[in-house]
Image 1 (cartoon, helix red, strand yellow):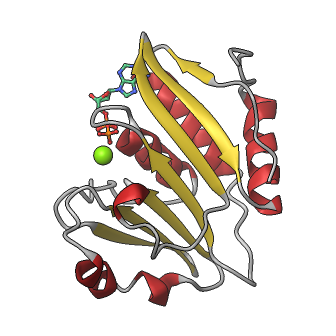
Image 2 (cartoon, rainbow, N blue to C red):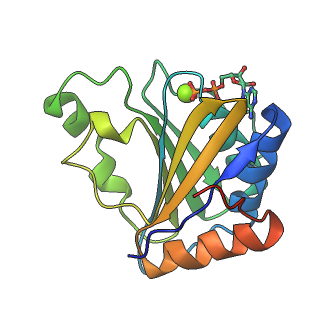
Image 3 (cartoon, rainbow, N blue to C red):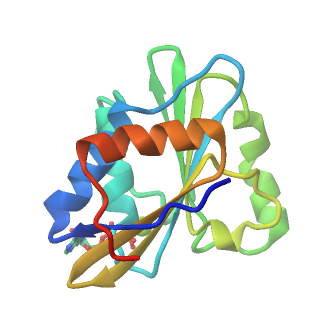
Length: 166
Ligand SMILES: Nc1ncnc2c1ncn2[C@@H]1O[C@H](COP(=O)(O)OP(=O)(O)O)[C@@H](O)[C@H]1O
Ligand SMILES: [Mg+2]
């Protein structure tokens, strides 16, 4: 789908959280498919910070745990499910299979995947892909990959406009 130009300049961790909260408030839950968001970026780029804020704003009431060691953390939000995955330490396709991500490709489910590069090509295509990098603060470049992802991105952009940095 269309490449979005522009990026968010995130001056501090609070800015990363606010962006996550905006995505969390506008999460496009649906009763016909899972939604998926990929989070890329070097260690320390802010992926977990953004994911935790997103999950809280989407309705997770318990403290969000980093999935760095367990690789997967699952939260119930009423009748919905949020699945937070960190594939940094993934050791091969067999371990990915064991995580059973396929079981979560179901309606009213959100998949948040850090380090998706370590799981490709076995992962389903995301609706939205956020590329974070360390800059002065952090920079986040969004890429929508489905109609739902475009709508999700547009909703966040209405609250926090993209900077036109190409
Ligand atoms: N925009 C930002 N500017 C400065 N520091 C940030 C920003 N966003 C997050 N951080 C900080 O960066 C550190 C690493 O964040 P984390 O979310 O764990 O990264 P990752 O999951 O990408 O490895 C945390 O201390 C976090 O508070
Ligand atoms: Mg992380």
